[in-house]
Image (cartoon, rainbow, N blue to C red; front, side, top):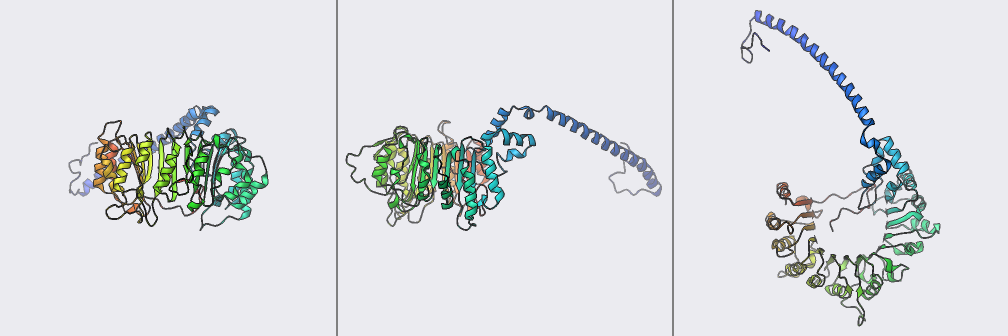
Length: 523
């Protein structure tokens, strides 16, 4: 747009009085034209908004989600549910989140999709605070109709308000209404009040397929939950006596998954001989987790036949006290596990006179193991090297790097740490097919050691190279660690390596719908 003053614009020129009047006259009509254009733009904008709203509303009428058949919509909704745990009573996730999208989806979810409500996690301290939450449990279970239900029920820890007996009793009665539909149930610290309510029901045992229990086993005995003939998964974890477990009325020969863990005094655990005799009845086991009583040998094991577990895929030894190498060797010598793929030995030597923990013989006896978990505090660098070299098929290694002060065998044989571990694995002839390395409870890490390890591993042939690295720092130390840096992580991501870093999250201080669910774990 031309102006009679175009050569003066953008300069320090001072117009005369006559020129000022000329400029004002010129701006007057142009300002009016600008106002007319603004009005026109507003009109066009309003017109556009109306047309857009019309188009959008009519497109919604013919949208694909609106026309989805109920069975397909249900399949989509079911795919939104948590897969590794039960659903929490929270609008942050399915199924409650799906009920907040629109009224039609809410009606469909509540009235026509009972399978959407067949899993539920209940943190007792959270639910019993308000009557409305107890009512929500009632509604949830009613929506499941007669479908098989999966429940996980947890109680709080010290420091939180203790629920009243009345509130717990009301919740127990709500749960009892679906007793016959229970299929997968997990109790963490079952209260005596809740146990009493269940005992008063005096119904036939539910058709349980899996049952996990943590707490006082005496509260469990009157409920006859273990009598279910359909039981295939059983896990019992207690701080009390567990040696009587083999006498329980369980269809041992039908079990595919078994866990027997004593977390207190080793004298309360099941004697080694009894474990072997029990496992001789469990020929269908696919996974086993057991803490045996510590012993260097099995008394009277002369002529004791091996327990043959031809289908066993996973074997976990969660040690809550010192597990001697002799004890573990006795276990392995008396078990036949030809198909074992996953081995987790969480042993630590924390007594006054700790001993190194040799496991090389295990790798030689179980050549198919591809997933191995261990505790660094149980090894010297030399023993760790020998152990890892014995597992020729290993492609996943999970390491607990927390080293206690007592896990030390003198200045010449210190307990192994993360840096020696990475130095060992930098040699690609050790675990040559390692695809995933997980290290938890990290305290320290150096850039030089990590880079040397990663560079060697990502340069290997595609079928052998490292694909996943997961590092989880100990809560007290993670915030102090700067290695690996974001720049380093990005550079390796660009190389195709998946890296996950957890520098430690603060604990949840107040109860919520998610409290009591297991934290994310890499093991």
